[in-house]
Amino acid sequence: MPVSYENSKVIFEGIKAAGIKSVSALPETWLGLLLQRAEDDPDIDLIQVAKEEEAIGIAAGAYFAGEPHVLLMQNHGFLAAINGVVSLAQLYGIPLCMLIAFRGHWGEPYPWHTRGGIVTEEVLRALSIPFELARDPDKVAQQISEAYTFSQSSLSPVALLLTRDLMED
Amino acid sequence: MERAKCIEMIYPELEDKLVVTIMGACAQELYDLGHRDNFFYLQHAMGLASSIGLGLARHLPDERVIVLDGDGSVLMNLGTFTTLARYRPANMIHVIFDNGSLLSTGGFDSQTTSGITDLAAIARGAGIEHVASADNELQFGEAFLEALELDDLSVIVAKVKAVGPDHYGMDLELPENAFRFRRFIREKKQAAAP
Image (cartoon, rainbow over all chains, first blue to last red; front, side, top):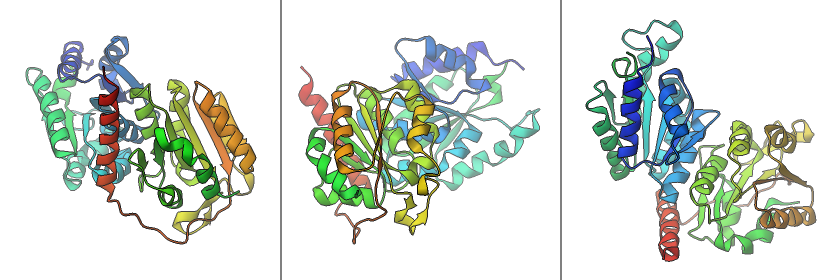
């Protein structure tokens, strides 16, 4: 199924409406249209990393600098970034607002995504990372704004899982 | 050459810079010279010091960011060179103390021991233009001064002995370090605002 043009736009506008000007990301299919918008928007500073754990460091630097920042990654990228999440963000009380493409879940046709998808929510729970699923384009902007607010008040990583319902047409 | 001597040599220059260090010996040696709130010690999450540096430098163009890194940490995040090369923060100096050893975790050889892996060559190959290697204190001091004068990203790989302090400990909790570091930046920005 194609990636939703309309909902990618809604998510991007939601990021901007939350006051975010700085985004770190590792490109992946579901995030592609979103990242194209970020690249083309002069008001958004997009930093593409080679591996998702780098983005945890960059997000910490942005936080120290006082710059509102969100991280965009796939759930497998989140799994690859866990030491940074635990031993930088959680250890030092640094907020992270992570928007995570939730691959390998209900309706997933690709075998290679499935194991990561199956464990994602349990890993988030094990790490005490608050998360919500984003399914409805009418609510996602509010969810982004609330995720960002909660990350800042709790000085904690927070995750919004972008589901197939939202990301595909 | 000893890392502690190198840090001592540049310490006066760090007074008005944002400094991020890696864990263990490097952090302790800077702390022992006198803690300042513009110093952030990354006591874990090996590899991410330079990523924090990029996040700082990118969002604070009027500040100078100094990252004090090590071979063991950089080896855990070699991709950082490629991201630094791509975004080329002009206000960041990435110092890598290469002691060829995982000193703070037991002194095991690292992949840079005996020059097997050349971190400066990796940095150059990643696309970083200004990369210096230093084998003695004079070279290190000159490389650091040159980097300070340059309005561009610099990497300095300093070959140092695998020795560290005879004690560890700071009167500074980890979140306290983060809170004070952030407050330092905020207050400096507020003071600079018209």
